[in-house]
Image 1 (tube, rainbow, N blue to C red):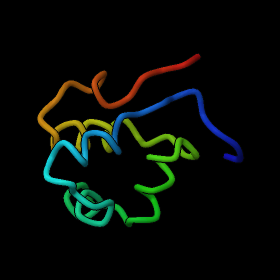
Image 2 (spheres, helix red, strand yellow; image 1 turned 135 degrees about the vertical axis):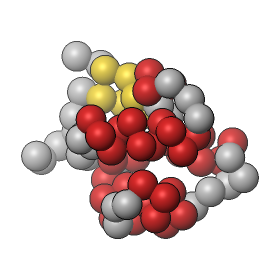
Image 3 (tube, rainbow, N blue to C red; image 1 turned 180 degrees about the vertical axis):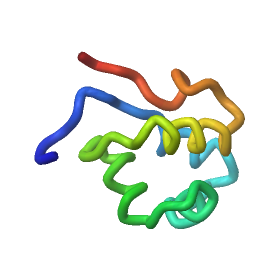
Length: 71
């Protein structure tokens, strides 16, 4: 999908709050490439629901603390 999607996220803030985790480190923990994680973090790509839950699980927070729907 070209352009941005109506879902914003707090991944960058959460990464820094969790020991300045790199995109590559988070990507490895959730099973995607760094490039995929970068696109999600930049709101150019929406993750699958499963991936969204895996990202929230890494940070031990609720899904809504990571992703916000801007519809």
